[in-house]
Amino acid sequence: MIIDVFKELNRNILSLIRRAYLMDPVRYVYLYYDIVYYPEFTEAYLNVVNNDIVGYLLIFRGLPYTAIHIIGNASLNALDEIPLNNRLVIHAETEPKYVNHLINKLSSKGTISLSRDLTMICWSNSFREFIINDDAVVIRRLSINDINEFLRVKSIQGTRISEAEALIRLSSPHWHYYGLFMNSELVAIAGTYLKLPEVWVVGDVFTIPNYRNRGFAKAVVSVITKDAINSSAVAMLHVDEYNTPAIRVYKRLGYIAVQGMILLNYNP
Image (cartoon, rainbow, N blue to C red):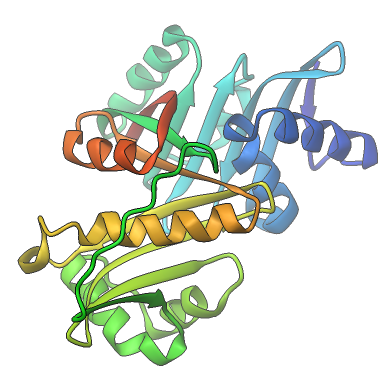
């Protein structure tokens, strides 16, 4: 049975989604989070068999592009209504035939690139803290007082954001940035862009090029992972399967790969 979540939303459907999320946070964290916190930007379609979710399609329009998650045995009918004049980022953990269908459809309308991401998890019993013993290095949570340094680093990263967006990221409870300062200069960042009591999703890990290969990114991710674990959550992140250096760093911190997903980028 296919359920259009926002046409049929009631307490039973919310309970079904929350139960699935608590049983398998990795698979259902984005579905649960977007429905609860950003319903105005979200479409969701569940495939339910015997009161269990066996797949879902999640469409999120709260970003500069449309983000789509195709998980399990999902109904793809709603994708036919999505305009193809904007960028799409599709995360798929489903049968290859569905991925191939999307590739064939989208490649006739624009350009696509295909990669594979690993989802990695760190639990309290697997975490191995990494500390840099250098008096010139300070790692702390960033605040709105750090906005100028934060914007400078984002500019070097090549991700220009407005001052208003930076203020949101540095003050919203949904975001949680740490920075590494070398002699009072912000040179590395990492943040969470999704926080629930059970899961924090870590991302936006970046070190200024002149300061790389010193363990700075590892140290910042270590601090934010420790913060998640101290809050009784697990830390989760995504990394390209060919980014061997990053995977090696995350494994040394105690992260374990638990899921592989196809990442399909479409540009009209």
